[in-house]
Length: 276
Length: 105
Image (cartoon, rainbow over all chains, first blue to last red; front, side, top):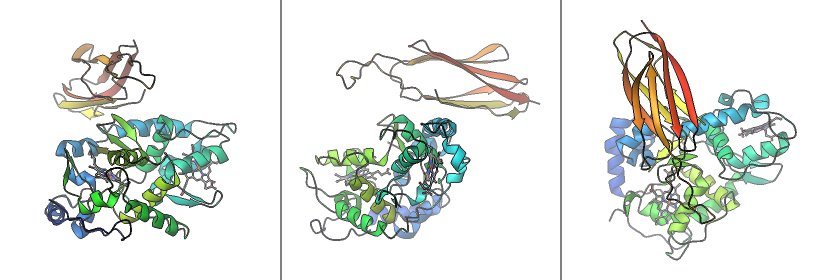
């Protein structure tokens, strides 16, 4: 089997120590695809985006903006961006200018929101703007409209390195995420780390177990036939180990994302990614 | 309905160019149940056609096994400047027509 399970229950800090065969693969593919997405990062330290594990057809689908369905959501996002909304009848564009002004923003989320005194992910940040700056209702988590706006903002960071927030409060949030990541859960009693650190590169039925870098969210999964956010992906993983999933938008998911982003620091953003 | 169409803006006479189109559509199979437990009625795009220089140059008939947000790519020989017209119709009766200019010369 690919990896070795030697994690102390719950406690030990997750080490980034992918099994040897994945390192070999990264070295081998690193030379070939150094110019492509996270290839460069993979060659240096063994971290690879799931993109590297996908079939060439899926990579081609992601790379071509005219075949990547995620761009349809970005297009809807453009329309919403320019549309006056809420009691204040004001559009995102009126305060923020062109969507391109959001370059680099998604790469540092989740971030700390002073006013509410909590960590927020990108979707929650967009909803804060709706409530505070547009006098509008928050959009439902996972709704088409929120996914469209989030995709549009995330797209502006495509190709940029993940750069976790430097807000001092985020340290504790990442710590909480790290603890969750290494806590065994569900009837199968597995931690995220069991699969994504110790067994990454191995197989779970038909799927290759990825290293779980959150480089491409929101993303288009062929299985879903639509865009989905990171929460949805993490709910799938939790249901997979027969655990009760955290609620969409919960502090637990924000903390997990904050930890995953720190673990993927420097890797390239690739939203909207395609996944099987 | 979001759609992305790629027709090259310019081409040389006789050049074979690729037309790409991706349409946001659920392509509902009619076999899925909604949250109320009832079947979601089938609604798929069942026909897509492309016209160029007053002539049909491509036609596809679709059936329920096609995934959501279908993507098409096909080739057309550029002959004169004009419009490439794409239209499609789904089973809810919605017809959409989009045109893109192409300059040949």
